[in-house]
Length: 236
Image 1 (cartoon, rainbow, N blue to C red):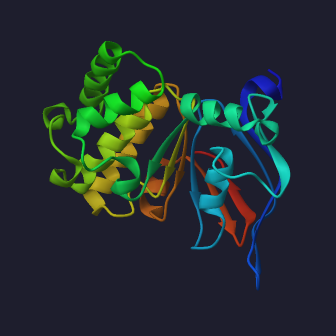
Image 2 (cartoon, helix red, strand yellow; image 1 turned 180 degrees about the vertical axis):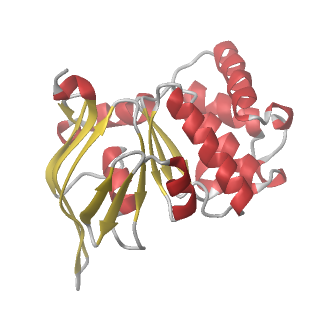
C-alpha cells in the first residue's frame, strides 16, 4: 500500500509563526507527521507546545507559514477559500473543550444537530433521523430536548461529539475534550472516542490526561515548543 492510500494526513516541515508589532512566536518549528487512516492518536505537551495550532492547521482553520499538509494526497494549503470550507464541512469533525464553542446555547440538543446538518446541505427529515441515531450512539437520546446549559459536562461533550459526526467526517479533531470533566466522565468520553475510532473514523485528541492516554495504549505524540520530541507507537 502506498503512502497516499495508507496515510490520511501528511505534514511536511510545518512552520507556524504568529506575529505582532512587537513579538514573533514560532508555534511550530518544521514539524513532520504522518497519520494513518483509521488511527487514534493522542497529542500531549505543555501549554504553548503547539498542540492546538497543529489541530487547527490539519482542520483547515489556519494555514501554515511554511510547509504543507496533505489530506489523502492533496495539499490543503493550496485550497481556495471555497475548497477549504468544503473540506471543513465534509471531511473534518471538531470537538472543543468549551461547550459554548460546540453547541448553540439557545437551541436544544437535537436542534443543534439538525441545524448543523441543514447548514451542510442535508434535508430536514434525514438530519432529524440521523441526529436521533447519533444521540442513541453517544448515550444521551433521552436528553435530546434539553438545552446545553441543562446538561452535565459529560453530556455536553457527548452532544458535541454527536454533532461532529453528523457529516460523517473522515477525521475527528478533539482539542482537550475532557479538560473540564472529572476523572470518571473524562474516561467515559475517551472510551466513546475509542469506539468511534473503531468504527473507522480517524481521531486526533489533544489532552493533558496522561493516565487515560497510557491506559488506552494508543499512539502518543509529545510536542515541546513546536517541536515533535516523541512519537510512541500504540501499545508502547
